[in-house]
Image (cartoon, rainbow, N blue to C red; front, side):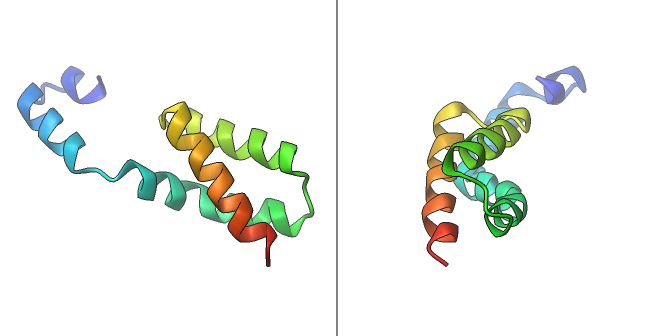
Length: 79
């Protein structure tokens, strides 16, 4: 929507969005804050809420956000 307001052609917007890897973007956006939360000893519920909210505020859809949260929790809480 922001690109459309700036006058970018709809075909260019759609083409660019198709090339984006939303999962990789969500992981990149959440990794640093997720690592900090785990290091502080947060619970799974707090982790899920904070990282999920962070991703949704940044424009990621719910499905991508929750999948990223669970993936990061499994990875980071094992260390």
